[in-house]
Image 1 (cartoon, rainbow, N blue to C red):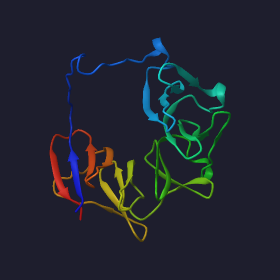
Image 2 (cartoon, rainbow, N blue to C red):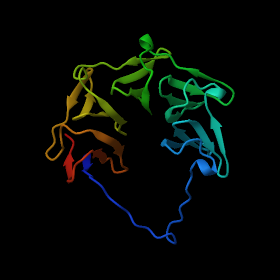
Image 3 (cartoon, rainbow, N blue to C red):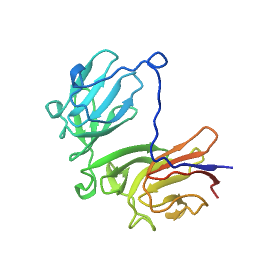
Image 4 (cartoon, one colour):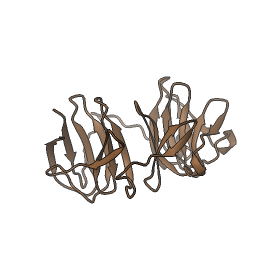
Length: 227
């Protein structure tokens, strides 16, 4: 049986002594191009990639390498990255999704050039996905991103997407947690204790198949079965 674990967190603090957990701080003083960082991704080769307000930064364990419009990116406002089998996909805010390679990069097309402001990228068995700043979901197919439109999504403002190990597709929206079911239909989950009319910031499947969700501005923890 799968469970939905809802952690409703208003704020929290963790106090750790320096002796227990050493902390190294990265700023513009020691290599970052900008101290505003949106995402950190580690690729299979061990590099860390920092998505910042002023370009994409690669960290090799000792030094930073900066990539910006001078290196072929069409925008230096980078919101996120996703590793593929052959390259690094970049959410280039204002310039769409960019396929980034060491010696070249190019923008991936979208229908009617709509996907200009992607804020997140996802990859699962169902394909490659992106969500833009307006909460519109796009799926990659036919060498381009296309709007993912199914009944029930007309007014959805999406924030996160998750495909579980069993193949279920969950979508966090600006108000509800939904599940995509066969027959191209999106259904709202109605589970006791699951909040509505709140934004969900995160979705994660744990090893025991529990789904971890993180809504904004709530203060209760509840576990309910997904039926």
